[in-house]
Image 1 (tube, rainbow, N blue to C red):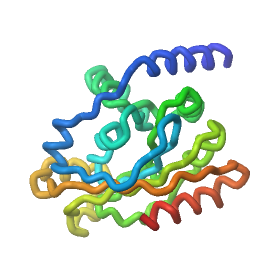
Image 2 (cartoon, one colour):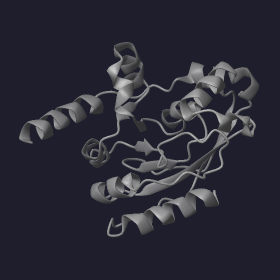
Image 3 (tube, one colour):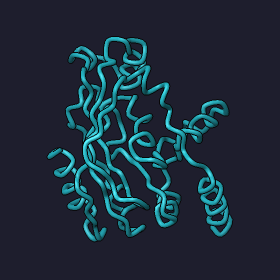
Length: 208
């Protein structure tokens, strides 16, 4: 266990020296114009977003400088992809690592559903990880909502999540209609009732 903690802290130290570089050319290519509504406090905050598209992953460091997005560890198993993922500010989903980054004053981003909802309907259940991370780090949660100018029709539901994303990636010219990112008011959680506090986070995110 001590070795794991030591390795984790070494990784945090290495990450702290890296400044995420927004993938501006990919945003311009896949999304178009991005409009930001509201603002976020400086320092360690946990950004909590809906997940209506694979394109979301490129937005966080763009709309809040230095934000690090928590992504599935599988992303880092491919050497070439790992290089770009680190450049764009991605880190693997790991609660102790996220807590360390936040305590160090770095903003972190997470999508509580964990999966893409290609129609942006917010129907998937929210996981409690965001509340637990924010409570352990002692930082505020910042709800945010991403809206795209165009969504595919319900026809995508007949396919798996993976196939949906592959289709949307190949058909990107049809869905390049810009996006609006809206920030809500920061709020704090105690972590005493993660399910109830996650329900409150969802309520605030849907209200946007």
